[in-house]
Length: 304
Image (tube, rainbow, N blue to C red; front, side, top):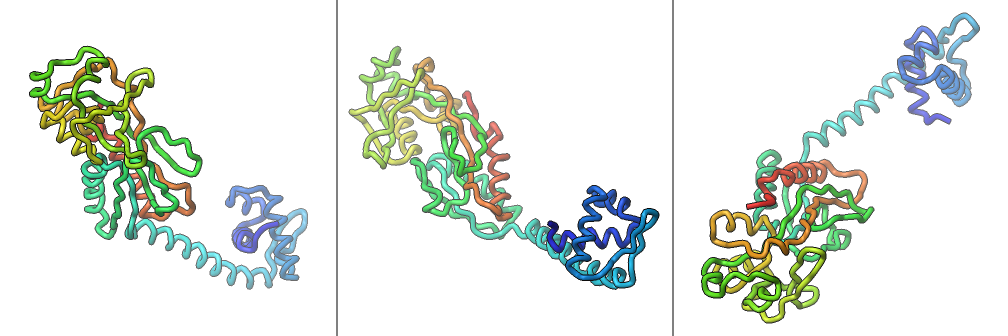
């Protein structure tokens, strides 16, 4: 059974065509579908719309009257949807709520969103910086950035980069304490770390073959990865930092990498959004922008 708009659309095409076969070709459907739609419309209206025989098909006077009315109605409805689509394409505006790890959100994400807002000045952003996973449903988050693979079917996710991890120290600390040659030696050195606020303990360090180590005697700890980096730069202790924070300092010589053979497998970095439908134009625009922007190696280099 066809819906009424579909039947009227088929009827209007048939009214302008020479026969049902030509109408079917114009619509990209079979002649049988055209015939059934016309029969169904005639049955509902109680009127004969076409005189048909084996040789020709001719619209009736009642059919011509209906075609004039139906054509205007179909065009108005098609115009309504075209107008809505055009409006949505032009009006990328409103509030977008995002979540990201603190270290990414404070620099790379804010810079990226600032460039996007130059193109769409009526976009507004609300950013939640949290190193632990955010409950995007409870917090009504529109778009998130997260380390690690996302296999949750509730999300649309795109991996945009890989994040390397580096064990680093300031030259002043290495000059004073020497360069550790093994993990056992590193564990005897002063270290700095970031606090996992869910557990109240330091975040563990990750090494090759899924080995982990949670430092206990810390020279410096904070709830900020950037503060951890600042402490490493000041010579408080050794640190394990993600590449997007460590690499600029490694390039400048302000930090030195140690024990590179312990480096873990790089972590995936993904941009994701809840699997909601329909997706507002502003959400799709920001999501597509971040996927494209964060795929740029400039944001997340893998080596110094």
